[in-house]
Image (cartoon, rainbow, N blue to C red; front, side):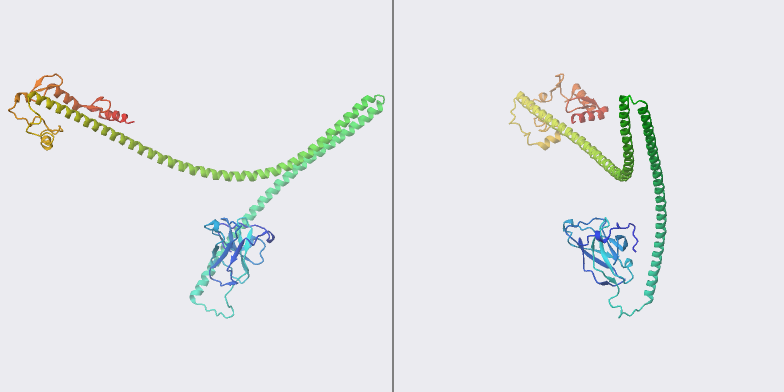
Length: 448
């Protein structure tokens, strides 16, 4: 027989309990040539649903139970369970096929060990055994020897398996002996309980006889005391009823003991199933914990990345706002210079349109002279001969003092302070240059 890691599910169900019409075998030959693989084709009926542990076995004709299979193969579940009527197939390897010429048949057995279909009988023999001339070459001899070695090896494996089964049988015998001892112990306990019940019953009967004797004595001695006799008879009747109740209670206790034994067996089976289910649940919880930790790690990475992007977005926004304010400041400064230019020209009595230069169109020249002014230097186009003393005189916006060299102490001091300080473009708060990190954190807080 074929040796597999896992034996197929079988049962001791007889042929009368099988349903051979639920699986139909197709294209079954009357005989198959030995030494080659064979393919078994079958079709599932509409009302039969295959399961993962179903299998197809090769049985010798005359088998009684599904445990008498010669070899078997697990079935392959259909890809589309809605179209199970399509033809299915399994392949048996030549090495595991029978070597005799007995009649065999395919049988489909479900995972409960119930036969769902059987094929017509067939044999393993050549097409025309009478006309065959056997010619054996050296290679075939070596192949036969190799097969003999494999068969010997398989025989040894079967012997080892037989030894293992014998050991299992001895273990089962020991377990059976232990169960029998437990049963004998329970029977002994039950016998002791019955003896106690019998002793109690005998005691009650003795007490009853004693009470009857006392009653007779009291009746003979106190014939005139009829009332007392009636009371004693009523008491005797009550005691008899109590005795009957006690006897019935003892019988009920015995029945409860049997019922508890049965419930104990059922609870043991249920406990085993619950332990297996608990192990599966623990494995599932462990897998979920691994998945949850991986998801949390991924979420943390995304959170860090999102925080970094938010910080960069805030910094870019701050830079954009800073540049926007700088642009507005420059535009205001440019407007102020244009107004100041007009004022100075009006003060000198010159017309702005009659000047020999065009300020708006001389971007390159103005940029070369003073790159800090958008419209160029408005004083560069004026001739030095026209009031040079007025053009060269400027006023300080802080102390309003005149200076001709283009620099004032207040302006130089203010520019030097600005170079050593950092000013927030949002709230105009000033930080020393050595506190650059504090300044950057302060500006970043405005974006939160």
